[in-house]
Length: 198
Image (cartoon, rainbow, N blue to C red; front, side, top):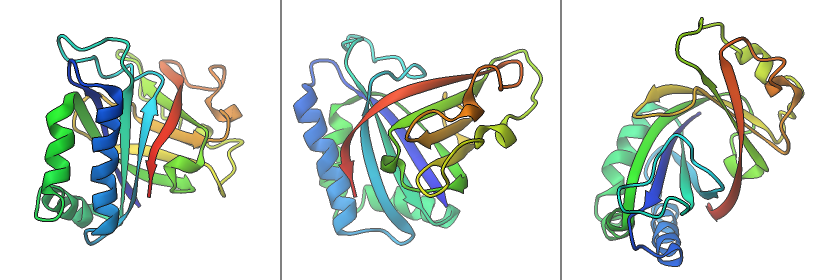
C-alpha cells in the first residue's frame, strides 16, 4: 500500500471556509469517480505544518492541510496524477489549486499496521537531523503500537521537504520517545482535524 501525501496552505486572502469547501469538493469528486488503484482519501487540517512555510503574503498562523491518497501501487500513482486533472475531476481540482499557496508532497509506503490515516488520533513525524549517522529507527517506532488501528509509514519518494517516517496512532507509543530514538532523530506530534474522510 502506498500513500501520496500532499501538504498545502491557502494562498493570501483565501478564507478557511472557502478553502476547505473546495478541498472537500475535490475529494468527493475522486470518491464518486475513483481512478483505478485508488483506495480512498483523507483531508486533514493540521495544528502545525513545520516543514512547509506559508506563501509570501499569506497569514503565517493560517492552518496547514494534509491530504492522503491511498493507492495500490506505483502504477496507481500515475493513474491518479492523470485522473486528478482529467474530465470528471478537472473543475474540482482547479478550484482548490486556485486557492492554494505553498505546497509540497511525498509518497509513503505502509510498513506495518492499519492503512486508514483518519483512524488515528495523532500523527508522529520522525525526521533525521542533518549531519548525523543514518541509523534507522524503523525497528523501534512500532513498539507499543496497535496494528489493528495504528500505522507506520516510511517515505519512499520525496517531492519536497518531508519527514522520513509517520506513525499514526491513538496516542504516541513508546517507540517514538526521545530516549528511544537513535542520535540525530527527532519526533514531533502533530494535531489533526478531519476535513474529509472517504
